[in-house]
Image (cartoon, rainbow, N blue to C red; front, side, top):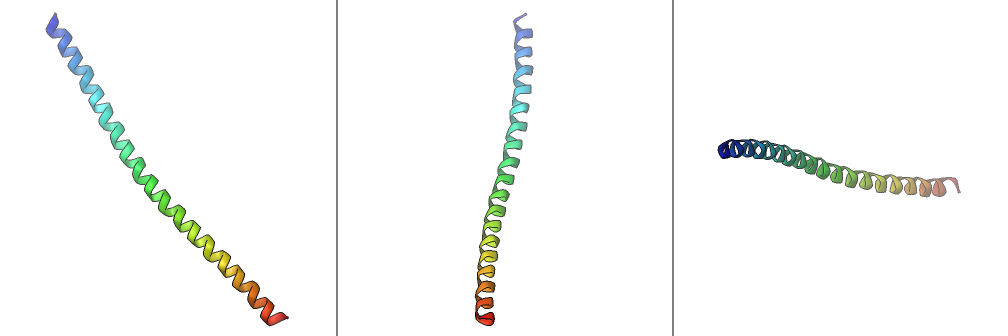
Length: 67
């Protein structure tokens, strides 16, 4: 009777161990996605700044050539 309980407990713990491993894998994947997202956000911010600078230069050029 006691050995049956232990076997059942081992099975439950094995399933929980497998679930924990799967969750850890998912967490690792999400961390990787998060890092990629951070990089993409930095890239977007950099391109946004370049676009704003480009627009400012265009305004200056219009002022120089049209006034």
